[in-house]
Image (tube, rainbow, N blue to C red; front, side, top):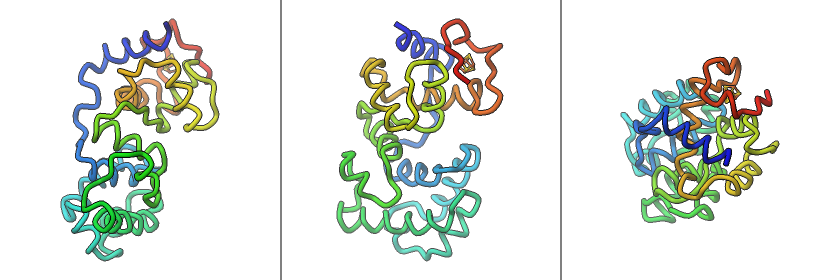
Length: 203
Ligand code: SF4
């Protein structure tokens, strides 16, 4: 089956998966909020810079908006995101006892948190069987012909039908690495890609 073959090949080139990611749910939540409409190479150092100063929900809730803005100004929409980070921190403290909720229903109630962000937290932070569809997963799945969708939420549902459940939570990390290095948004490296013989190449 095509999807199983894709996962097998991705695991063969990235056997460690997305091993370097910080799997603390609060860190994941904030980093995924910061990643919205921002490149990975900007998001990662910016998240670390923020957490070097404010390491917990309690500290972020007590921070001034201008302090957060100053630390995250490299990411897109940083003023909006600074406000959201403070609001999210307050909600987690006041409504969830300082603990990030582990259900999609509660996560998507947080400001600025959609299914992608929620599923990243659930998959990486809580090891739940979910498919987090970010820009890489959406683009690559459609290019390969695994799905034929126009919106990430549709892609999530379509992928659930073709990928074995045991692989759901790993798909995001594998396709992020693949999308950063091979199946890039602009200039995919098809000539050196191990999917060349099975990919639909819908570019
Ligand atoms: S063959 Fe090209 S389009 Fe297909 S997965 Fe590889 S890089 Fe992407």
